[in-house]
Image (cartoon, rainbow, N blue to C red; front, side, top):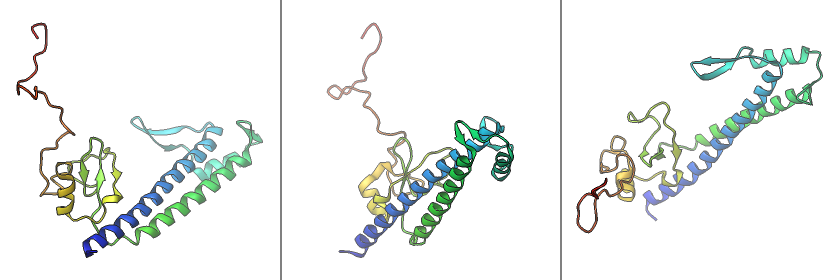
Length: 195
């Protein structure tokens, strides 16, 4: 086994574990947000927005919990108010544990190449490529972690971003292109009533 093969196998294994840990973190984040939202909804708290994007609540979580506990109602949405607080505390603790687990695994990363795919199939070396936007969604490809640029170009060629991978061919622009000509005659199809 070559050193490069061993590096790729180790990097792929570690990044697969790290990716799973970050997936668990994001699930815990959604659960914590949901638990927080339940408390704010129970109080009829108002959301704050930046344009059309929600950016928080009028009350901080701690203020909302204190207001909920001070409220004379004992039930919200058919559940005891204490359940809302217990669910929130458990979700926050799970979130912190998931974050700590992911950060601990990240310590194993020593700088090997990583690969990220975007909608449409283009592959980037990081989430900070100048051709991407703040709104670009990324998927992680840990099975490719640790490959050299040459290996990645040989395996995936035009799928690779030519900004991230200067040696990648540039045929790929917006995904695989459908042929717009007849493979037999080589002529473009005719459309309309005379076709």
